[in-house]
Amino acid sequence: MQRVRLGLKGPDVSEICFGSLAISPLQGRVSEKQGQEILRYAVTKGIDWVDTAEIYENYNQLNPVLKDHPELKVVTKSYSVTSEELFNSLEKARKQLDREIIDIFLLHEQESHLTLKGHAQAWNALLEAKAKGLVKYIGISTHAIQGVKAGALQPGLDIIHPLINYQGLGIIDGSLKGMLEAIGFASELGIGMYAMKVFGGGHLARHPERALKFIRSIPGVQAMALGMSSIQEVDFNLALISGKEVTEELRNSIIHRERKLYIADWCQGCGNCVRTCPQKALYLKDGHACLHGEGCILCGYCGRSCPHFCLKIV
Ligand code: SF4
Ligand code: SF4
Image 1 (cartoon, rainbow, N blue to C red):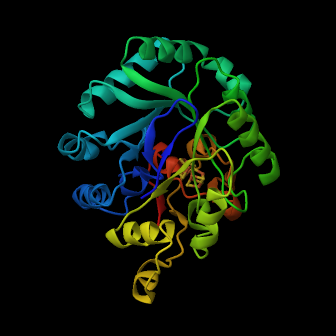
Image 2: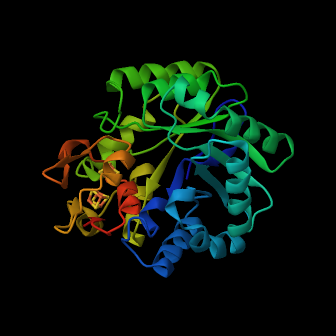
C-alpha cells in the first residue's frame, strides 16, 4: 500500500488508517476477539496505524495486537478540558495500550476556536506532554469547518482529523465547499490531515469507489481512517485503494447492509442522547428520543450516554 507523510512534519504512515470504532464495543458489530483478528489481518496487509479514542472503550481490545506489533502506530483522542483530565487520559492510554509513547494524541471533536479556547488547559498539557516525549504528534478531530480553521491556527498543532466525504454528510456547520476551503487553508500551513467518515457513516457505502476517489483527490488530505469490521471489508478497501479489480463475490459480501440507529420503546426521554449527539441528529418528542435520519452518521456515541440501553446501531 502507498505510504504517505502526514503534513510537512510527518509521521510516515500507510494511506489507510484502521478505524477501530467499527470493532469497538461502542458499535457492537463484532466480538472483542473477532475485532482483534480483523486488525491483525489488516496489519499483515500493510496498514500500520490504528485510530481509537477514549470514548471507544477498546484500549484493552487493541492492547494485545499493539504488543505483537510494536511497529503499529496508534492515534487516540480525548474530550479532556483541564490539564489534569488530559494527563489522566494520556496515562490511561499509555497504561492500557501498554505504550510508553502515544504516536498521535488528538483533542476529540473540536468545533471552533471557542471550543479550543475552552480546552486551552488541555491543549497546553498536550504541548507539555509532547515536550516531555510522551506523545509524538498532537492535534484535533473535528466535524466542523470552523474546527479545521481554528485547528490550523492552533500553536503547535501537527494533525487534523476532519470529517469529509463527497456529499459533505455530517459536516455540522456548513457545506462541503466550505470544508474543502478550510482543509486547503490548513494544508497551506503544512498541517497533516487524514479523513474521517469517508463513507458518510455508511450512507455512501453503495459508491465506495467514488468515496475513496474523492478523498484522494483532495490536496492536503494525505490519508483516511476506514472503519472495517470484517476480513472481507479489509480486502475490499485494499483492493479499491490499490486499483485492483474487485471480484463480484467480494463486492457482494460487503455491499452493503443498510444500518440505522434503533431507539427502543422503553426510552425514558431523559435527553442525555440528544445532548451527546455531535450531529444534533436526535430530538425529544412526546417524551421519547427521535432521529432526524439524514443527520445521523452512525457514530454510536449516543448509545454510551443512555442509562437505559435504548440505543443501538442495527
Ligand atoms: S444519533 Fe447517535 S449514532 Fe447518530 S450521529 Fe448522533 S450520536 Fe452518532
Ligand atoms: S438517553 Fe436513552 S432514555 Fe434518555 S432520551 Fe436518549 S434514548 Fe431515551
